[in-house]
Image 1 (tube, rainbow, N blue to C red):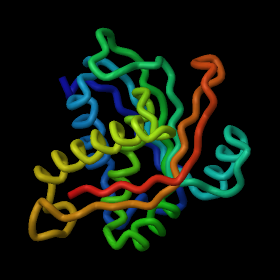
Image 2 (spheres, helix red, strand yellow):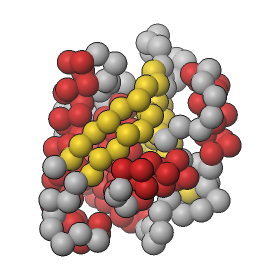
Image 3 (cartoon, rainbow, N blue to C red):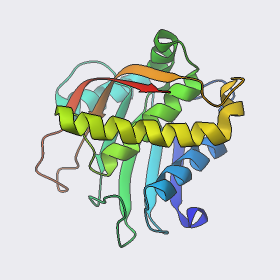
Image 4 (tube, helix red, strand yellow):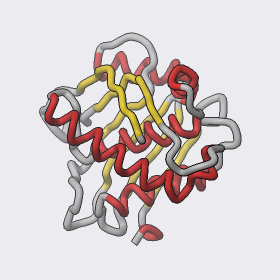
Length: 196
């Protein structure tokens, strides 16, 4: 199933997403997430890494908020977990420079932060949100579960001695809807997550 996912990754940033970044790691995580979330084979996902300036432009254009943000999600086909038919989930845009600053603040690696942001962005593409306490609890539990499963099998990639290293982030995130996809208002707010 995972081999049939169509995942497009572009790095339009002036730097690597994190030191030693390999597109295959990002692709493997994306495939893992889609498989865990029961997304049908043939589904499409686009991931873009952007510098602060273009990220700030998107942030201003879509949410009327100044400055760059860490991650933005642009749903396309309004897919949900366990979707019956393949489709285009949409785009996740990540700003490596913002991610690196957040990683330093949270005292974990930039790789861990980028993985967290990708997971968070994919969940937004599938309709998860955290504007209300109940939504927040569901989304962050799912995010922690997915990251724990991924990290358990890839702990060596994080430079930790055990697979139970903690990932945490205090980052601002954004969910954006394509104009024709939904009438729902895009959101941006602070979030904190803890992965045990």
